[in-house]
Image (cartoon, rainbow, N blue to C red; front, side, top):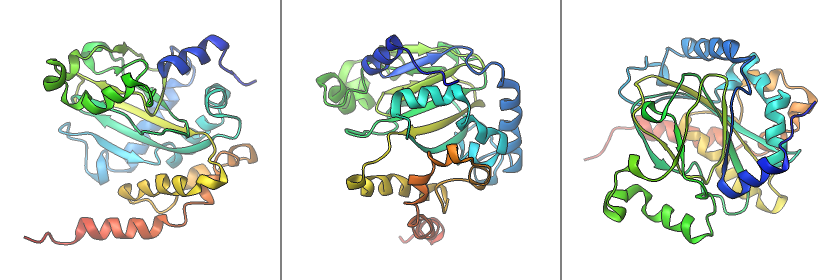
Length: 278
């Protein structure tokens, strides 16, 4: 049975751009943590096979796609209930990333989408408070055509000069979490974290409304961003190999529009490896 959001939750998300779900995945959290660590171990424990040393964020793209059991999160009716309520029954799964975060994360949006709604579902695998790196969000900052949203977009990275306050003093809601909690937010929503440790575990699932046929070029541009992670197709093989017909509905549009990724990735690799010119 699908766990659809109720009218109050939908209104809250529309107004403020985020939702929290305490304990939603508590029954699966131990297996999720085990699978998270397994994926990292397979990839050398850090970014690009280099062990995470705490000096910077480490990230693995297509994260849940790399593990059969993590891939089933896309089938979990609790996750599907959030997704279908916010981005439709025919939503697109737009990929995942797994992270070890280190230190502060400045204010930013994960996208700036004026038409298509994109959301992120985030799993934090350590207990986090306001002082130890929990997610902070600025309610209402997802409204990009609103004066408030536009002002934040223009000045948030320069809060010292614009408003005389540091990033961590920007008025915001701190979403303190424990393992098993879920946080969901609109990609446009301004968010950050401050005061965290050098090894904060977190992974995400990115979802969006299905793109209309006359805007597939925008979808292809979004998919092309995966080249910076040196991936050659929209999804990892475990996600595709174990997909039911029900899951494939949420993969098909990306799979039909990722044919340009191999060439973009080839160019990205060349750019990274070619000698610099003085």
